Length: 416
Ligand code: GLU
Image 1 (cartoon, rainbow, N blue to C red):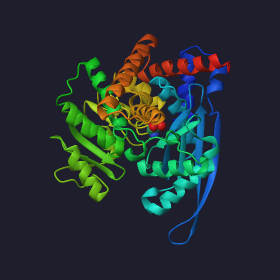
Image 2: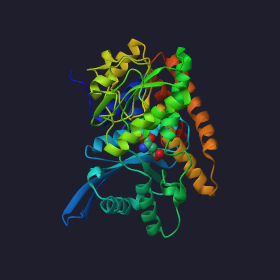
Image 3: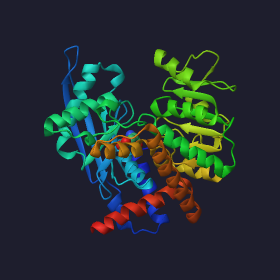
């Protein structure tokens, strides 16, 4: 049988396996297996060269039982309805896993912002919000950045929403720039939270992080910060990093700050002096202590799972490992910190941003990271506890916690 690679089918397969493991009836699976609401929108605009272009956008609101729905907006040429639905399901399990009072959602536009001017990006951002203004809001559904969107785009989106509702509403969106009510630490938060879970995982397997080797796939916001924090906070040796154009390798260690500056200038890490060029596929199979997939989904599959040669996989990306690969890695004894636990630092600090926005009083970065550490460490410990209790891998362990929390909220509301 060929491997399932469709993201939404993968999320449904995980959910179905989790429901079976927890002994929930099939009605429960059905109640949880689709978004509460899914909208597809059309965005037509004039480009700088005078041509007319129509983009397709989405918002998937998966589950609102635990609070306003929450999740980023991804702009990518490969964006799809299936992917947005899967990502919205994972957001639901993510907010539940770290126990913040929010539901799950996700949005996206099929486009390539790397080929667009700032004016075109602003126009598209504002038009997305105009289309969705009726179904988002601080107490309904709160978007945020994701792949290829950033604080400036969030600022335009917030402004457009506020023009429509005619009052300030900073908590309609998170990941905003600091002067507009963003939170200290938000831009590093996904990596910071992931690195806290790596610290805990290393303790569990008796790995000394000082000098431990790490490989980071993907050098966007999450990946580049993970590399810097692993090096600066724990003295790990970063032996390889990559981006969409390819990877670089140096057994003696790459300076992650130098790699980030190089990418800033040349738009890729490839070509950094003193490093050997390798492919993304080769990079994933390098022998190392910590492997950090921090790019897109489906990079560890049935094809390469057996060749993965690491002790810890810290999934900063959403959906990097397929269910088949999960099983193989579990049998091989690799400790996976699953995506919706490992990368939950971003949404956790988004939640802190909403809280700060509500009472217009802002915390220091130190306060944000201390609170983040407590949330991430507690969620990591509960996940490991559940994996041991159910004798399963950590992704299923994390599902055990999240499902129970979402279902409890649904039961108390009388939905099921
Ligand atoms: N896009 C991020 C994620 O996948 C952050 C979402 C948010 O802050 O709402 O978790």
